[in-house]
Picture 1 (tube, rainbow, N blue to C red):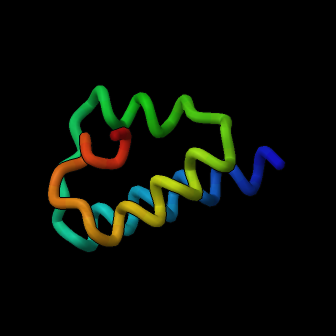
Picture 2 (cartoon, rainbow, N blue to C red):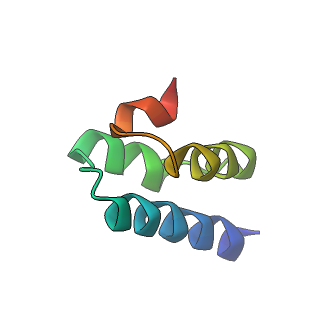
Length: 58
């Protein structure tokens, strides 16, 4: 499970980077500290449309 969580974190950050969405240090910390797979999957779904990283967490 830990490997999958790490993979989801990396995928999320790659999507945000590819879309040009800046990731603040606090958002990066929140993403890297997340161990809830459902949250990460939800954030990935949102990452394809957000314009601001804080929108992931709404």
